[in-house]
Every structure is written in structure tokens, then in C-alpha cells.
Image 1 (cartoon, rainbow, N blue to C red):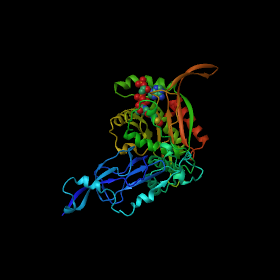
Image 2: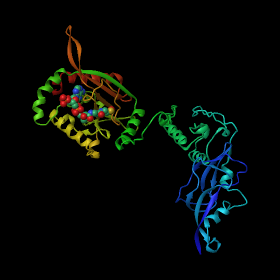
Image 3: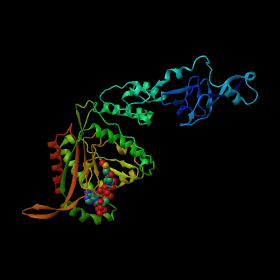
Length: 437
Ligand code: CAO
């Protein structure tokens, strides 16, 4: 009758070598493994190699840890094997019995992987060059990498001579291959422009640190921001709108509107002025089609408004801004930003935008360079209004100025149109009677 027995797999004959250490553990307790499944990786100062399993079964216990020094016959892993005949199994101390007859299923020849994966390395490894962008190839003898890493490189088609190792003695680790592949993908996306690999630094070497995962919103928005920043040729045009009259009007309405629980901020005026500017410059109310050869001109005026939430930046869309008055817009803006902060937005609330506005005016700062919210082709940043002396009719007079930052996609919008748009916009805001036209 077939019963489970326990086998101990030990290191093979290392001869006189005494400086062999375990550098990788490739299985964990509970893993079902096959004959030849690599169990651990050893490294001496001359070679690295994997220890393949001599039996199929379930890993019971790992007897070593990374960094342990081993020599010939050191127990490495115990394995529950299924196929042993009861009569063949020692009645007592099965584990010990297995250990006494340790590794060699194929006793006549060392296991296959062991032979194949051993890489002789030179006595004195030459310092590894940084990630090679020139195509220069180094001999394999210069490369320090464990068999697991070599196998990963083979599977991904990575030439190890081009990978900078971050381990001891410039040893190449799995993370180095991941970074290399990511960088290669980035290079492809950036048309082959060489990029230096992102540094991987153990900051705890310099002082206490704490790991904080990014919020879900940040993880999602970060990818979009990265794509838009890298793939859209941005130009940012700055200007200031004189909103002295606008602010007088706003203050005159504010108290009355507060009674109705309406908060009339400069932002709604900006939204209306943007609509007027989009009508005057329709290329700003457009998206490139997938071929990148045609513009899809939009005949509606939906506006994304960046909202700062504890989870990160969210851009809900306010529809038909052209058809709504200042008070309705103010109410809707308050309602949608509250829902954004309470995580109550629906997917539809985030769709269908034509142009976005990002206002940091309630916080401060003089100007910033907003990132275009693709597939839109422009975005307006609004900073905090401030008084400054403006020369008018032979005198300096205090005027309330609103700093604006317009980022646009230079594939679609020429610099001259960028400047025309922002001048038009500032004129609209400087005399809000223009918005009635
Ligand atoms: N200049 C001077 N004061 C301004 C101002 C400006 N440009 N914009 C707003 N203010 C004032 C408002 O009038 C209000 O003061 P009062 O109550 O005295 O009138 C105060 O600042 C706070 O305004 P607010 O920020 O609550 O309201 P808002 O309509 O201006 O903005 C919203 C709403 C949702 C856009 C805003 O709360 C927000 O989240 N902003 C951050 C957006 C963001 O993170 N952008 C960065 C994206 S990175 O590209």
C-alpha cells in the first residue's frame, strides 16, 4: 500500500568547498513539486547553482535560510513523498531514514539542472558597468546572477550583459531585470529615447522610514498623469486677468446668495469665460482621433473640474456649462465636489469632458503647469488672485489679478492660438459684461 513518507534532501558533494551560502529559497512549505524543481540557489565565490529536487512531493519544511553557509550533506528541505511502499518504509524515524539516504535519485549522474546551471565566475569579478545603452556586450564571465535570475532573463529575452546589478558585487537580482524591462518598455513608448533607470535606494540607510501604500485613486490617476505627461507635447502659457470688477460684483452678491446656501466663488465665472473662449477657438474643444490625423470637434461644452479629495485628485465633469447660469453652476460645483470627497461619484460623473479646469485659487501659489487630461487638448490652471499695482492712464492703481496657466497640446494648438485663447479669456474675465454677449 502506498503511504506518504518524509525525505530529506541534502546538498550534493561540494568537495572541499566551505564558503558556499544559500542565496535564494525557491520553494515554500506546502508547495507541490516535481523531480528537478529547483529548491534553493547556492553561491560560492566562484559559482552559483540551483539544487533540484530528487523527488516529487509536498515541501514539508525548509531547513535553511538565506545567508546560511552549507557544506556537503547539509539538510535543505524535507519532502512528503507519496509513492513509498509501506514495506519499504522504515517503521520508525522515517525522516532520519530518508536523511540517511539523501539526495540522489539519479545516483549515477548529478541532477540535470545542477550541471546545466553552474556558471563559473572569474576570481576577481570586474566592476559591472551601469545599464548599457550603447549596445556594448560584456562577456558572461563578468556577470554575477543566480540561476533563477538567469532563467527569468532567458524567458524575457533579456541580455544580462545589459543589466546593472544592484546586489553585492554588482550581482543581478530579479528586481534589476524587472527595472530593466520596465525601462525598455518606456524607451519603446518614448520612441527609443534613452532613459536612465530609476534609482532604487534603501532610504532606511539614511534615517527612519515607513512604507505607505498609495491610495487607489492615486494609483489610477497616477498612471493617466504619467501617460499624458509623457505622450502629449505640453506648452504652458501664463497670463493674469484683472478681476477687480468681477470681485466687486461677486462680493455684492455673496451675502444674499449665502442665505440660499450658494457659494459663489471666482471659479464659476472662470468656467463661463472658458466656454466663451472655447466657442471663439473651437480647436480647444476637440480631441485627436486614434489615427492622430483628424480632430474630433465637439459641439457641446462639458467641463472637468479637478477636485482635491483625501484619496487624491478626481475630475468630475459638469455638463452643458454653456446652458447653465452662475448660480446653478455654483450649486452643481458644490454638490459634485462634495460627492467626490464622499466617494459617491458614479463612472458617468467622470466621463464626457471637453476641457478641464484645475483651481488652486482657494489655497495659494502664483502659477503652475497643469497636465492635460487626455483626450482633451487643453487645461486651465487657476491660482490665487492678488492685488498688484497696474499702470493705468498715467498712474499705478491697485488691481485684483487672477493668475491663469493654460497648458495645451502643441500637436493641435499653435503657440499663437494658445496666446490668443488666454488673452481672450482674460478679457472675458476683466469685463464680465462680455459673458452676456
Ligand atoms: N483667488 C482667490 N480666492 C479664491 C480663488 C482664487 N482664484 N478661488 C477660490 N477662492 C476663494 C473662494 O472664493 C473661497 O473664499 P470665500 O468663501 O471667501 O469666497 C475660498 O477661496 C475657498 O474656495 P473653494 O476652493 O472652496 O471653492 P472653489 O469653487 O474655488 O473650488 C474646488 C472648488 C472643488 C475646485 C476646490 O475645492 C478644489 O478641490 N480645488 C483643488 C483642485 C486641485 O487639487 N487641483 C490641482 C490639480 S493638479 O493639476
